[in-house]
Length: 116
Length: 146
Image (tube, rainbow over all chains, first blue to last red; front, top):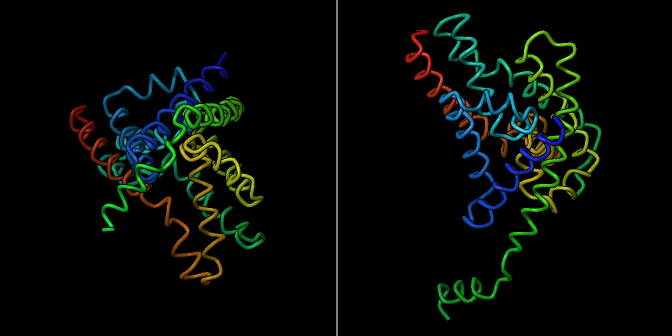
């Protein structure tokens, strides 16, 4: 059931993004940046965390969840450290993935060639 | 013919985008990636202490997956059909980083790969942090944390 919800919610978010991309004729960078900011705002309003509780990876994996995770990390760090958390918290949750993407991408850029 | 008229003529004669078909593809591929993410999240929850740590590990694992599929040349094939279904999940973020690293490697390791690895993913990080900062600042003030 959990997997079905993740599938349906994640799929719905991607399909909506595709609809915006096709109808508004904006670049995919605009859509992605819009979704990240939307995630941050929804998190600030306290809406994203219950949504993620319900949809699991369906809410975490799309880039909306990335924006929300940045904000969640900041609030968590503010509670722990004070104002410094507004800065250190950005990478509290996302930092592992960001550093991983740098390391893995560098490794694969060394061992494989572009395909087109 | 004026360039403007030509542009208009081109716009009128472009085949309409198959919106419904694109949405279906995005739905299924995006949904499948998220369902796979749920498998990873459930595994991560079983050995990580907090929700946030489980989320972090899941994001990193999906990023690794996106990187490997990109290096194998599979992800770009998927993305061609799936559109937003491949770019919106975090695996698509990894795809942009890895393909930029692979493409710009020939311009050198420092100013090629080093400088341009985040050429596409950069805006997402920059505006993610900026919007997150503003929201977190307001929320911290409202909740009286600062």
